[in-house]
Image (cartoon, rainbow, N blue to C red; front, side, top):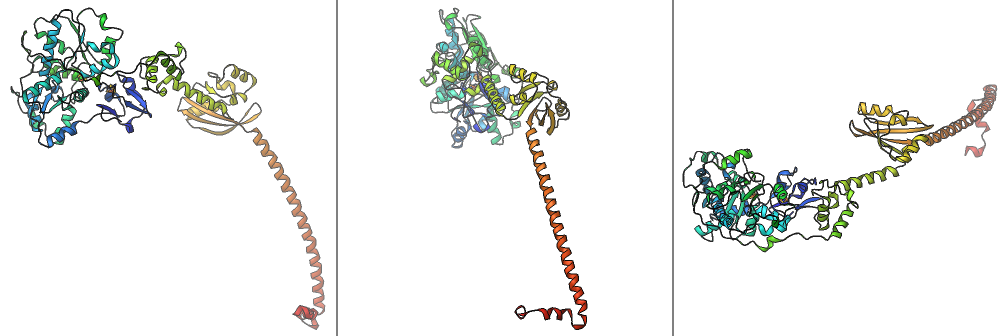
Length: 589
Ligand code: SF4
Ligand code: SF4
C-alpha cells in the first residue's frame, strides 16, 4: 500500500477480482502478492478505479489532516474553489458557500475559474498564430499524465501553459503574498498530482467530499447558510465569467469565443479517457495538417462528473448549474494571459519498452505460442494479448491475470486429478449428458463404450442412460436435489458402489463408481470361515457337555453309594462321625 500516491489500494479489502485492472485506462495497476496494487509512476489519478471497485478497496490519499493542522494553529489558507461547486452544494448561493468556508477558518475564497480565464486568453493568442502545431490543453492534470504514460509521441503537443488551478494559485500569491497557503476544493483527485508537483503554489488539493467532512466535523448546519441570498462580491478577487464554463465538456472551447481573431472550428473537445485514447490511437501529431486545439478532460462529460462530487444531482443537472448566474463578457474582453509553467522532470518518466523477444517469451509464459492463441479477449484488463505480454515483461502483470491461461491450467489440473483417481468419476448435466469422465469409469462400461472413450476421452455429450442401466439414479438426484449415498448396483457383472453428489444445484452432478465386487467376495469367504469356526465350537461344546454328562453320571453313582452306606450306618453315629472316623491323623493337622 503506497499511501503517498493520490490513489492507493487497501490490501485487506482487495478481493483480487481484477475489475480495477480491467477498467484502469492508464493500465497503472499490477497484481502483486495477490493484490491489485496501484503503480504510482503510471497512475494518472483519474479516480476510475474508486468508482468501479466493488470491495471499496481503492482509496484517495487523505490530505485533509494537514489542512486541519494548519487551521488549528491559526493559519488561514486561501481557498481556490472549483466552478462546479454549485453542482455539489446546490442549495447554497455563492455568498452562502463563501461564508461557510470562511467560518471553517479559511481567509477567503476565490474562483479557480479566474485562472481558467487567463489560460484561455493565452490559448486564444496561440491559436491566432499562423503555422502552429496541434495542441492538447493542459487544463486536466489526469490527461497530461495519460498522454505521458500511453502516448509519449504526443507529449510535446501538451500545452506548456499552467492548468487553471496553478494559474489561479499564482494570482492568489501575486495578490496576497508568496507565503499564503492555497487549498483547492473541487471534484478532482488528479489535482493532488499538481499539489505534489508544485508545492510552492498549491498547499493541498481536496475534494468536495472533504469539504463535506469538515462541515460535519465542525457540526455546522448547512441550513444556516442556505438562507444567505446571492450578493455580488462574495468571492475574493474579481467574479469569474467565461472561465466558469470549463467544468463541462466544450466549455473551454466556448470560452475562447470571447476573444477576437480566434479562427472558428479550430479545435475539438473530447472527454473521458477512453474517448481520448480512441482519438489519439493510430494518429501521429504530424498526421494533423491543420492547426488544431484539443480540449481534453479525463472525466466523461467534464469535471462536473469528477470523482469527488457530493450531490445526488444527475450529470445533466450539474452541467446546467454551471451556467447558473453566469455572465459571459462581450467579445473582445481584455484578460491577462497566463505564462508558461515548467513541468518538473520527475513527472516526465515513461515506462521501459521491452524488446520483441521479451514479449514473445512473456506470451509463452501464458501458453500463447501461435497467433491463434492470442484471443485478445480483454479479460486480463489489457486490450490485446501483446499489451498484456508487454506488461508481463516489465513486471506490471502476473500470468494469473490471463483468464484463458488460468482456465486451461485449471482444466489440466482437474484432468490430472480425475485420471489418477482409482475409482470411476463421471460428471453429468441436467440433460443427462456426460460433461467429463475418467478412464476408470470407462473401464467399468461395456466394450463399445470403452472404444468410444478411446476415441473421445471424457465421453463429453454421451447420454448416461445409454451407458449404464441405472441412469435413473441421476434423474432422481436432479429431481430431488438430494445426494445418493452408496447405492449398490450391478454393472456388467460387477457390484458397483455409487455415490452421487451435487456440483451446481440443478445443473451438474458428479458421481463416484467404486467396484466392490472383490470386497463382497472376501466378505463371503470370511462369513464361511466364521460359520466353520462356529460349527467346530458347537461340536466342542457338545463334546464337553457329553463328557460333563458322563462325569455327572459317575458322580451320581458315587454319591448314591455313599448315601446308601450312610443310611446303613445310621445307628452307629452321625454322618459327621462316619467321616471323622475315616480321617487320618495327618489330615486332622
Ligand atoms: S486512479 Fe485511474 S489511473 Fe490511477 S489506478 Fe485508478 S483507474 Fe488507474
Ligand atoms: S476532468 Fe476535471 S475532475 Fe476529471 S480528472 Fe480532469 S480536471 Fe479532474
